Length: 278
Image 1 (spheres, rainbow, N blue to C red):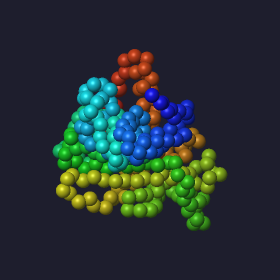
Image 2: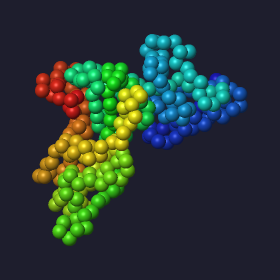
Image 3: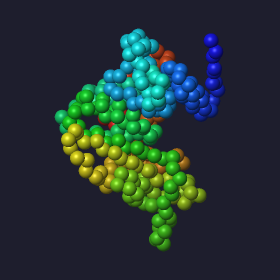
Image 4: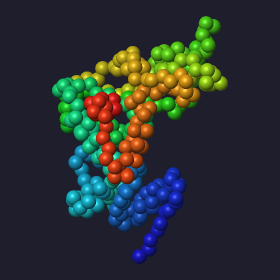
């Protein structure tokens, strides 16, 4: 049996892309081809135009023998080409959201904001939304992407200013996007002219049957500003991110470090009941 391997120690070298086009070429010649996506990035699943629906078995369920192999195989958009998709990340999202919302004292019609700094895909948002609605079907859910990795700089050219936008000032660039200054003038970053503003994007999902009104960008700006924590003595106060995203990576890293060492880990009782920390 002929074996063809596309291998590289580095990411982004075209392994998945090469495998995808090889499979398509074989399928076009009449061979029946099954592709198995075992990459957490799910790039192959995306290339083949497959969206994993709720409760659909994927490679994870096949490997855990929760379903038979045939139950995890789906037709693709290409003739003679089938796929076993990968969606472990979405399943983790759904499990995390269900557990978190179940721990909070919520009304039947809450408005919940999901803050994130790494952009979610449409599939990620759909998975989170399904999980949230399984707990509170009549809730309103807003996805707020807080982007600090951009090249936008805003300057105030009025003579009475130092060139920096004052803290709390924001600029509306689209019905769903604002740029907001959360630090104002910072002498440590004087070479940049003004500290990096936060790019805030919001998408809101209303309960089924309810029309989506235009987002209240002023309220969004107030919310983001209230969650920022300034540290003027540090050169790292460049953009004063909201605490919901600024410390998320540190919290995840420390938690994982404790769990890897099989040590007991528990949060302070106050933090256990703090929605932004959860």
